[in-house]
Image (cartoon, rainbow, N blue to C red):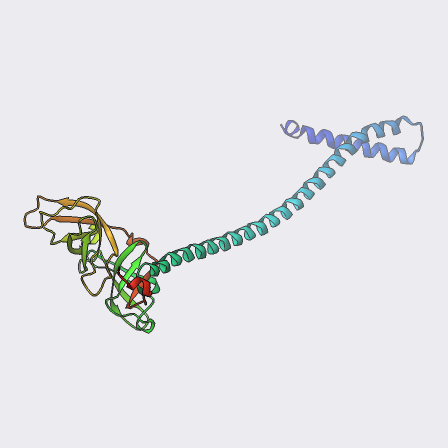
Length: 281
């Protein structure tokens, strides 16, 4: 069993030992034409080839290992550079998107004769009935309670609590919110009240009035808080069968309140209107 298991090793060892013996004998009795020398050379040639191939194989493997280690280090450096560039690209993209949002918000000042103050949303309160958030501007920036807050494309609420450097915004969908409004198509007036996650409701519109799904609802300008013409939403449902004298009108706001990041507050003071616009012919 031992011979069967190690037959190859024993055979190579015997050949190697015989080669050494013959080589020693040849060195002692040197003869250029000796038969023993020829046998030694013939026997040593395969062994030398095997040894040379083994040494070259080990050397090549070591060189490949060194090369792979170098490539791994280079790949690690390149991955770090790519990650840094991707992070920088994300930051540039975020800055670009923020600039676009601010440009849209500031452009609203051209639509209304009020000076505007841009602010950033810094906190939210989204309870079952209460829908408010906080912004990073306050009385130190000229803000006062009651000022309307807008974003493209329209009204989102008004200021309620104002401190020196922050303010609370009561959203349209808060159940404590009430806004004088009208139906754009028929000029029918009512009160838009917040309904939480259900959006808004238009109250105090008689059942004899013409109100349809898809009608645009906007501020009527009847109060001293909201300028006339601020977009609120569209009528999504009209219930004529509800008990009572008034229609049950559901409104879907134009604004997605969950995605707000920057807003514009309309100050109470009006911009100077050019003289040619003041003249009514």
